[in-house]
Image (tube, rainbow, N blue to C red):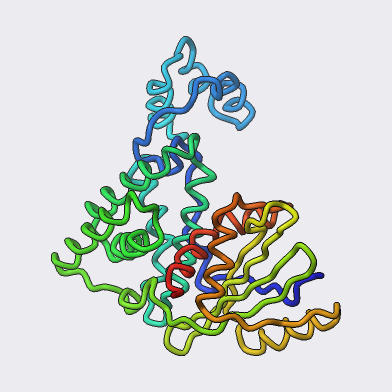
Length: 302
């Protein structure tokens, strides 16, 4: 059964956390060197990109990845660490507005983390990259830096949350003012849960609210593919959502079922215990971006 209106959250305050330079670790913050196996065609790529001949010739005889990175930086092909950090923090500036919300901050952070993961040469390096980002952001000490530290303290990998929390606390202690959404971050009120089953597939909606602002995490499970999460996304178009899904289910002779918070948690916990099973590129992107938010929300259920 096709899902009714699939309205995914989109920021109306700019383009999110911005593009990260394609450098090792994704941030240009001395995260390490690339694999030599990826450098064989570097000179050809530089020439194809229109790099000056002297830049291309500067790599003659160079095989050490660290030297290559330094020469790329000296040639102006790669941004400096300071430029990279400034570009990253610029993307967080929209969250400093008085009308920004906790949900927007969380989703900005999750989408930022997805970009970092996609840019990383080795997924295992992502926590290290983020630890370095936390350190650089604290030293930079701007309101944008405080915003990113507050968000990473909640939605970042467990390895970086304590450092982000401590760094944010020091910035506040030094006189920076927190954004209005900080006290709400990661702690929405739990609302109703409901869903339906369609053969081996199951759809579940978990609703939450930050004061008067409601949102729902929509989860698709596929028991024919092992029972894991096939797709998940977030929508703030909650008004009328239950009726919409009830009508869509009724068209296929299905009934929408209300779940208690504990029942909803049991269903999702079982799914999270299995490998995710996205089946198309959009589902792969959604799961990569929003699965962590699903885990955070399910942890709020009794």
